[in-house]
Amino acid sequence: MSAIAATQSTSRITPVNERVYHQSNLLGDWKGSISKTHGAVEVKVVSINGSTAQVEYTHNGHTERGTGTVSQNFITFGNVTIATRDGKQAAFEFSFQAPGQISQSGTQTAVLAKAPTPASDQNPLIGSFTGADADHSVSFTVVSIDGRDAQVKFTIDGNSGKGVGDVNQNAVLFGKVAFTNIDGTNGKVTFQSGHQTFSLPVKRFTPKTA
Image (tube, rainbow, N blue to C red; front, side, top):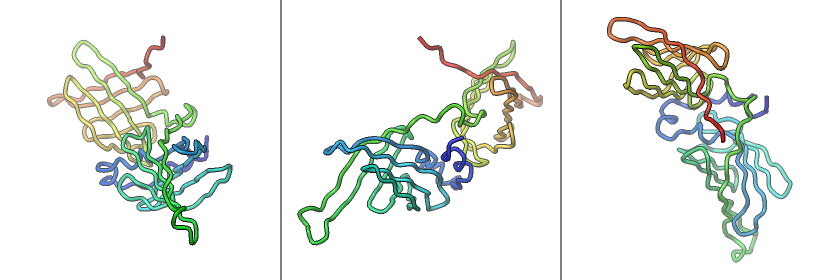
């Protein structure tokens, strides 16, 4: 397991900030190059704890590690600021000012892309699971997990919902809906319909490749 994956579980993002700003999107390994100089830069957001973030910033072959400040969907680490809306691409800005050289002050910018998380590092609960029988159909997706909070969305018999569920070992609970992952591929979704409770087997959805 990578250092990032090992420490993400210790992140503490308030449900309000997650709902409004999707701060968990900031977590991960961001890579790109400066627009003007094409120099490679990498920013790793290891964890978020309230208004602070553990950050690793690599440029010119040198890595700086420390604590950044989290504000909405921004993280500022020294002269570096990174922000993302979709969790896939991030805007990067580096502000600099040479001592006594106002003419050499300015900013450098870049567009960074988040490196994919290795499958071995990803929580097996994350993914989309579907199932159906003669009477009911279910689609349940665990979008992301941060500690004991899981971003989920689901559709049961045509009725959709989404929000933050509670992680309990190999299960996610969201109101009256429960998803249990049995072996990483198979699971079950328990839900209420009318005055009855049903448990429907589901299987991980895997997109077909060409």
